[in-house]
Amino acid sequence: AEDMEYRLRTGEVVDEATYPLVPHMRSEEARLQTFSSWPSTSPVTPQDLAQAGLFSQGQGDQVRCFCCGGILNGWEEGDTAWTEHSQHFPNCFFVLGHDVGNVPLQV
Ligand SMILES: [Zn+2]
Image (cartoon, rainbow, N blue to C red; front, side, top):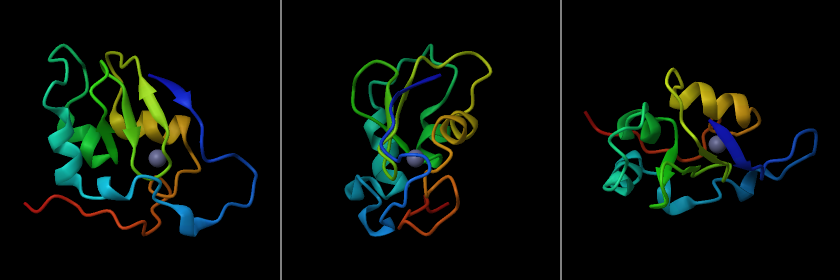
């Protein structure tokens, strides 16, 4: 995968209170529901993406993180949602395990 946008800048003091950037996507269930037109050929599943904080904006295989606002696309065989998210956006507070209000799916 490739990152399209880098909102959370490296090496800068950031105000944690401004995160998550997309508060209405804090819920994993809400994120999962955005994948209704997800390409079935994609090597990553909506479940994995939603769990990794990512949601679809309906544009191809492009997803965005509810917390850092980072955008990923171009998913390739062998990619996983978590590894790509953490490799491209290592300073994302959700990736770092901070409490950013994520609501996991009730199982
Ligand atoms: Zn993120």
